[in-house]
Length: 452
Ligand code: IFM
Image 1 (cartoon, rainbow, N blue to C red):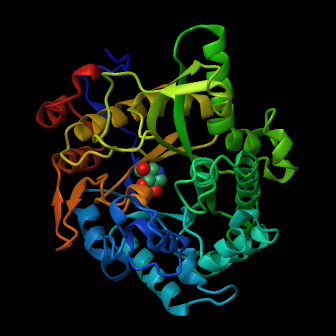
Image 2: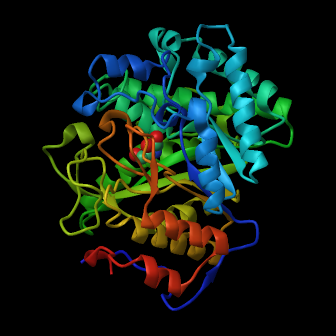
């Protein structure tokens, strides 16, 4: 049996604070289509995606995002997280695309006209090719170039958005691209550069924070941190030690840099001076999907002597996904929110969801997500919003179109959307600003047996 708990009682109606944000999270490369100048497009052409998939026109947002904004409005959502595509806005270094800025103005106006508040992410894994070719965040001029881009975006779009997410999942970007090597730039086992990239991203975040506030003093600026709950396999001191070290390296580097301007050993050897990073956030974004267990193992020196695994019988997404799609673990939302309470800042759950083509466990994930958010709020934590990943099936990076995260299914041939039951359920919660026992009875028919 899983030890996942229901954070609240099943027979109670959970009513959320007035104005709570119910949203969905999206990203440019995964939704817009035809991002020809991104390093991900080059990675696709080089055969880097499962089954040779390509993003293609993706969810066709560059032409028709408004179709999905209508859907979000019909679902009763009042928030949507999207990213702007650097490779479109600055296709060559220092050259800005006026038509692309105009399209993003239309997109943001379209959201506002529907009563949906945008949260704009400035970097969501995708780089312009010219930036990638110069070494991306390892290039000496990376900070200046990223800050120049951010400043330009705020000058062009700042009247339509004041809620900014600087960087999406800096730990995922650096680990998957520089340690696992399955995302661009495809470095394998490059621990030194993994941490250097993450440290540069921390400085890039801080520089972006300042550039935004200079232009928009009332802006709310944060970043979205991916948290992978890493619990020790047993209570033994060695399992706890290696789980703690892996947690510090993966989950904690960025938050600690923002809170204290320090990195723990051995990350401090690569991180350089972090003094500018301290205090640079107005909110914290939590992206939470999975849990893994960590056991001490002499055979896993490259993973700091910690062997990670997912126990049998716990809730999982679709079969056949890469190993880092771990135990689906909504309780992590409350645990991470508690952990970040020390910042005293507003919290947004900037992503939570599951790859589940048949909607087998997504209703349960939606339910448990809401319960955990509610429990965190009841504990006095300032959780202001929840953005489900994602509105419709989207291009899932190295997994391509195999994994399906949408509240609505996407037919790639016709671009037709079909709302899944979990989408109806999420809509009921957002519309009522509450989770009721009736909704649970109606929609959560097939909770994973191991989780009840
Ligand atoms: O699709 C991704 C997203 O780009 C970043 N966070 C995790 C999602 C699901 O894997």
